[in-house]
Length: 239
Image (cartoon, rainbow, N blue to C red; front, top):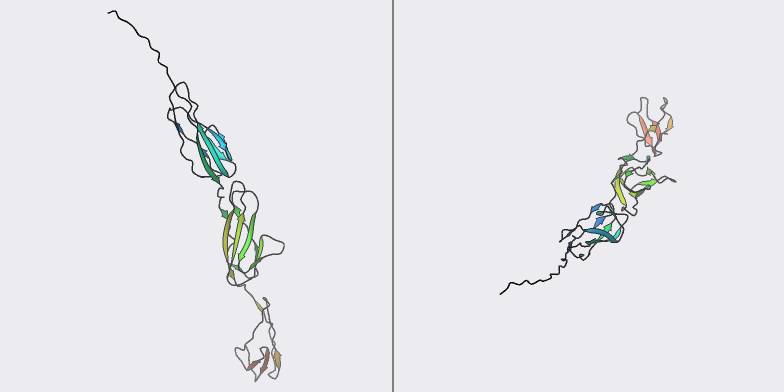
């Protein structure tokens, strides 16, 4: 037999590929996220925002501009050896971020009748901090939203400082307790001149608090009646 040759044609087709794109957990609105996915072909995977308040930068860096539900798509278009992979969509929720803590210390104790301004700082949003009296013996001075007056000499006052949230942050509240203390007072009691023992004397004194002043005889030949009336039964010093 003579030798012979047979020619055959083999058609080459591109292989399939799949994408592995792990589920992204729920995020806070201020998070910055680096996306990662792999294709079974080893080819680079690209990402795109399908829906939601997300911003994609430099191909893999994800940030958010408010809250909501975000859907991200991972794609691989294929090449001469691999056909395009089926897109994989990853959907997750974005919630409000927590603000930086408020620094709120109104001091304690404060005395009855004392007035002072509440102040606080911190948080992460713009805008004023709002104060409130939750309970206890205190009130805001008329026309003011920061100055309070202690109206009790006992117990405690609970106050709060609140900074509102916005499209990125939840609101934040700081609570403080102020112990109420009794205020000091003084008595004005004019020196009583020397008396004849037959005199009848009406005592008078004033407390800076406006409270009633009570009298007593510590020593001497004197008698106190009706709280303020003094009479004498002999000569000698009286206290």
